[in-house]
Length: 301
Image 1 (cartoon, rainbow, N blue to C red):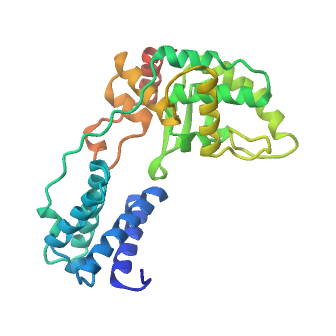
Image 2: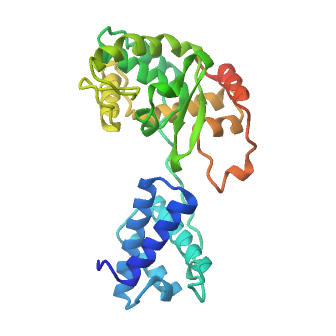
Image 3: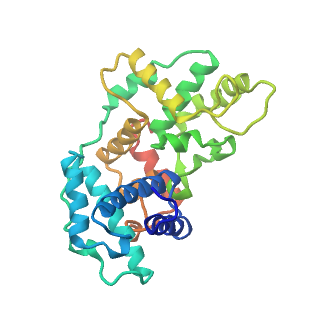
């Protein structure tokens, strides 16, 4: 794709706007850029010079191309959402005579329900972690922290020691869109976290320095792939016949709290799900309310 054509310039203007005005995560912007680049290919084939002179039939053909490639309805719906946001931006910049996406009806999608462990399976997984080596101590702390907080794996690997406040019952993390939030943790996690901080982590850190909460044997911050690998091995060793990922623990955390009666507003805050569109429908709740809700409704609370 030529670097200086109108398609490229329009995409980069949109990505810059997302960075400045929306503060979206890098991987989200990467997905948007890829989706729009794919659309540009179709538009070129239809002899369009830019996104601004594309018509409804042009975009409909792009959607039909995705269907012919047998992309999932969820993927097509996501790309359509990207197009709508992009053309809304172009319209706001005064670059359109007519917004062609307004004629496209939204797709009806049925998302696959997330895999969720039972409380008994979680208990089996956590109780199976009784090792005394630094990496075993680390694994127990990671698994308990996942289930205690519902963190995304990227949020967990991004934690620093200074983010954890066990004495006050919460931690702070940076989620999607580089937004920081406060997440309560139950007192039941204190033994495993304290042991990691006082025994396991110093043993791996050695003479080196660093503030990352979870470290490798080389005293480097753990990556998402390393956490995933450790979890898969732990699930297998515990004899759990289920495909479990870090996000499975996150879904399990949320599902178990809802099943036990937690209100959606508190859970929304804990998970960091709210974005510009959804936060207007939810009332912000105080940290003390979050901590009390977590304590009352978490299965291990």
